[in-house]
Amino acid sequence: MRYYNLLFRLFLLPVFACWFMATGAIAGVEPTDYEQLHLEAINYARSTPLAEAARLGIDLNEGPPETPISNTPKQPLAFNTALISAARLHTLDMLTNNYFAHNSLNGDAPWDRMTAQGYSYSYAGENIAWRGSTGTVSPASAALQLHDDLFVDRGVAGRGHRINIMNNDFKEIGIGFSCGPYMQSGTTYNACMVTNDFGTALSPRPIVTGVVYDDKDGNGRYGVGEGLTTVEVKSLETGLYTTTFASGGYSLPLPSGTHTITFKHASLGTVTKTITLFTQNLKMDIKKTDFPVTPVNLLSSQQNNSTLLPGQSLIITIGSQPVSVSSGVSIHFSYGFGANQTVYAVVLTPWNTLYFMTGTNLLQEELAPYTKGAGRLIDLSWPDMRVLDGEYVVMVVVTPTGADPLNMQNWLDYEIVRFTAVQNSVMCPMDAMQCPDGSYVSRQPPDCAFTPCPVTTK
Image (cartoon, rainbow, N blue to C red):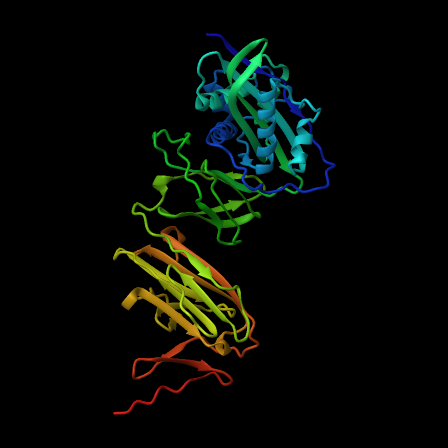
């Protein structure tokens, strides 16, 4: 069996004179499990430079590198789908056409390929490497070994690949990893090849990145086939969100500041973390075991409109079939959780008062769970003359029974919907009064007095 491995010199060129912005996502492009595995190896090296060098039996500044490498942790790299496209197309082009170079056969340099995919950068760099054998090749092993080869950078003057990997100016990456037949010097190898396209956008923001995975082998690190897909990753403060790739990875650019980040899985529930971002990226991995021990059926929501105009109806449905309403607002949901879970339903009004829904057509300002009733329904309606102008926020939260609902760490599940009312209406308090017959009446314009209770006869 003949073994062949080749690394080419890095190609790094900071560029500052581009005029178009980087795209955040390209439809249908996402990393494979092998590309995710390769990124995890890179980010591990960036987080613990000395430990990575020791693992590979070298000094961090062995070589020496053309530029000395500090032993301080580097910010994690986040996937950018434009860079993934550029890297993947180059890897496939090299494999298909049996060449190995930074410049494509048509003369395109790495920067040309990046900009062609819509990525505008202040810093950019590229690493390429391949491994091959006349025998069988394990893609998962090759994905990790190619990282090791690039980090050690044996035989490459200046250790440029290692410098690229450890460059803290880079915030994003695209990885193109592929395996297939590759001819070199008259011999066809079963080869795996990788392209790493590093970048930083012109107007970068800090990025929350990481991987959500099921640690099936118990080694505490991501592995091929362990990613949890379509997990919603969301900042509650900004409303910005993304979903995990099929590989389990995710990238969520956010403004600097404190964020409550929720990881919401369709059957496992919700994990909540609080973070503070400055200018650097932050890596946050979530394991399957971090989700609630007992899976819950998550709430889902729908609404027929986001704005309520005079004479129109707005129906918000959470977890059940919608109900009809001729005008005004109807909030309607059902749930089927067990006795060990409690539901809280609240409405935040334009005048910043928080009302808890405690039963059908009943609101109060004191913290209180919703009491399960017949059919387990909340159907809360306001005639449109009593829906006051401004934005309303409706939130439903599920917690373990006895847990503090004001602590987001206790949320097993949540759903948030918003709507804006444009009614030119009088602002009356949104409370209700219980009548002797058990029904409820509310305040009415223009004087905001309670509607008279129904007259009962004996």
